[in-house]
Image (cartoon, rainbow, N blue to C red; front, side, top):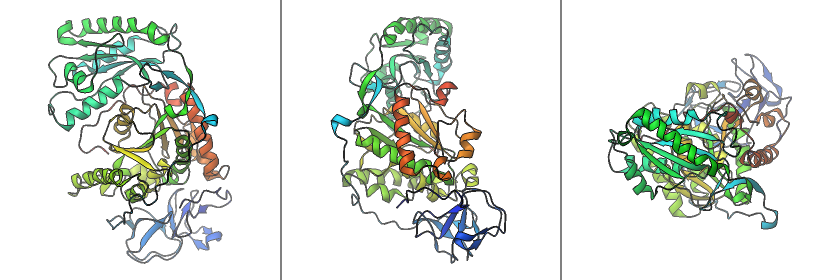
Length: 515
């Protein structure tokens, strides 16, 4: 269990669970420094977030963090020795699954005291946190055209439309030269359809080339979309080419502005908030501050009837048993294991990818030894409530509460799937400093440590380093994050929005090695 406490700001290291045989450095230290509260002396220089042996650890003995196995000792390790990915060995080990054993029904807040936010109601009952007009390409061949159309609508041109957040282009690198049927095309259809019909989008223009495999007509038929005053289409080969299509597209968007601007924010139930949970540029503090704090905020959101989507399947590997134990039924647990096993099988041939152990150089420098340790922190974002459903990439999320979506670990691809599924807010924890935007959905950046927050303050929205500093405990930090959810959902600009990030991060998954 996570020990939710304020950490001693006078200590240079902490122990996270009484069962752990390691302590975590809270600051950079030199070789020979003593940690009197743990009665040890470190044997080498160490960076904040890295691990130190609390006791002697025998060769092949498990390394325990939060009472969970994150690897094995490669040799006899002595008390005070610094642990890295070089002496903590990643290897497969048996994990006992007890499906549904820890599932508990959510204790919902009473209706009369449930919170609200200020959102945009759509005619079909969905609610947006933003009010964009989208310009979507069916194929990379129309990518330049959709960006030219969107870039025409500068803040100056939109100054008389205060209720419109912008005109956003969504282009990608595929749509032709791919399988005409089957999961790759179905996945692309789902992703494009999810953005065309997204609650944060008031109106959409869809632009194709004309000869591509992902045809406008095929997309619309597959997704049940019809052309209306809010959804228009252009095909470049039918419309006279590049310049003519850009001109026609601008005219279409101009015709959508007044109607989109008539939509105003109003009070809506918090059950309409769907948060995609992301982490990138993780470090050892991710599992100490930002991720468990975000998990606490998720628990509060779900008690108000809201939804949270955990994803990045390769980054729950090693702790998937903790999620199947929370499943509402055996079918949901088995769905999750089917997706985990798919990743294990496709990458089981010695490929140097994350699920086979090695995390990125930035993760390693931040104190993470391997995927087991990274997954331990990643799963904490999902809080403690029941796992209600498991979705394929970019499937429409219809179940309330805590759900899982199968995605790669690469953040733009993962977030694109969540947004296509309906996420109208993204919560993104980072320990190394990820600069990420995700139009049409605001991306809230949560820093794991105060040094990062202060160094990259133009990108970071929330400082979860207050937990490490001893100024807040996880519950207090979670309450703050929850309150910030309401503010950002109601229109407060995130740092990524102020910087106009998110113009190029639309990235549908091309099934293969991505994350």
